[in-house]
Length: 374
Image (cartoon, rainbow, N blue to C red; front, top):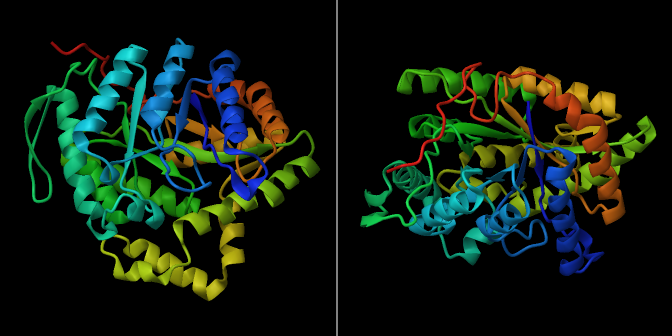
């Protein structure tokens, strides 16, 4: 099974300078290919210590020059915050620089501080995402950016360099609400499942997505990409510390950054799912929700971590898993040890699990090979 490394570039609690925190994550990125990871990924975030990753294709281009085989993915690029032409150009350039190793992850964003920083109305994000995504994905296949939508108007312009290869089968989107899932099916992209809700609910929604995708497109979607934060300990006591200290701190930072406890989501079009979540937190308390979010992630001895990840993979029929080893205020030496245990004791066993092919596999059938566009 394809197993990738996620780097989130957090710098919580002011224990490190940004330079120190960034250098630490870059060092892990440089080790990824050598220890055997199949890909490296990072999300897009702005303006806070939650994630210092403002230009993901730029970072991946740097990593492309340092590597030769690993795929390079975004988890995710947030489309409403940027011009669609620049997004398409950035991915085309990354694909040329890496000779076809780019994997596109897209989403519509949630952090209010980031929408405010870019002067974008959150209530327009669903419409912006739908129009931008359609324009970009069509541009990847045709080599021309052109769109006449309600919010986005783009006269026909060629992408140069032209797309290196088709992005079909290597484009994924994060989706949480049922409305978003329906949109992703219509866009013909795979799903990226980030652990945020009970696994039985995620399993049911994935089944509904596959059925909807098949209904719309007449074929199965690519298997989903599963994204989890992972803490490994040589003993159960060490593993429990990973959960109680670092996964819990990650969960707290997530609630703070996304304002999951903000009942004001009820007034923002397109974020109704989070309005319900905030009311649930108001009823049961932030502490309980942070425990819930931490417990959705993975921690344990190597055997326990492998077992738990494969259980999630089987439940979702996932085609790949992405693991984040550095998060929640970990000191660099703690994160390096976690990374090393993952690479030595967990990674080979995950890769030995057969899901039928590499990223983009469709229920045992490889997606068509990439081809250079003429």
